[in-house]
Image (cartoon, rainbow, N blue to C red; front, side, top):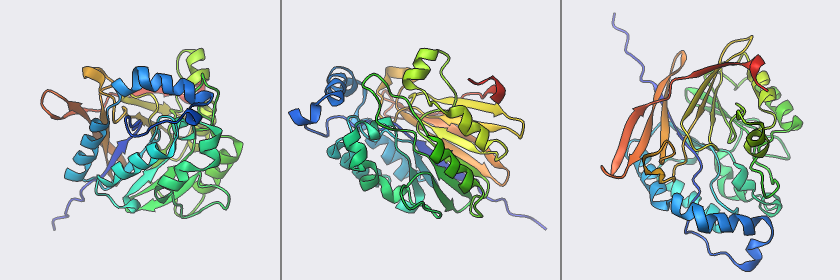
Length: 312
């Protein structure tokens, strides 16, 4: 008797959209931190991050649709409504319905206290963060049961000082994560979406400025779940396997979807992963090649193995 093979589940991973040229800023928009961010946008980001690269990623998703899409945050630059609206409209270009998209915020989505207070991420992207086990006062963490996998979304982005892009989960969110892991719907394979990588930067100063400040606590809670953790933030294809006393955790970082890169490791692209009955079964990078006018398909980076006990 022949047993038919089950096609692997395909999960696409996109992050750090950073749309440029989509908002006109008024003087009132540029008070304090946004003023410094606007200078960076004018002098650096608008040349580096191209809206047309985002469109090509979405068109590729439409042409070759995955079973599910994870969007890892930084939908905006300075956290104004016009940027959120542009990225939300762009996601529609993928052709995927909301129930096949999961999204979490990054530090730019919580760029200022005003953006956080007005819950702009929730207004524009809340449809992608709905939970089967919602908390009454917050979207995060969320738990989503999807055909063939479970997605947990975390919020690591909070308003920070003008010189910081750091991430924090906080004690309450970590407690709620532990609670969600005991929920009957939290079945493997388990994907955990977060913006900041839980692996620290090698340079302590860069870690203080840009890293996830409670990353080790997150990994300790996830130990034993066999989770695959998807992140953005560093604008690079990254791959770690963390050894814990209760089994390994896999961590994958994705480039910015809009970085023109010029052929560098930061060139715009996204990842596609495969999941089978035994969990993670490999994947690929799709990196935009401006010469060919198409995406090059490359292997994921080889996993760098680290021990949980060695992480700061």
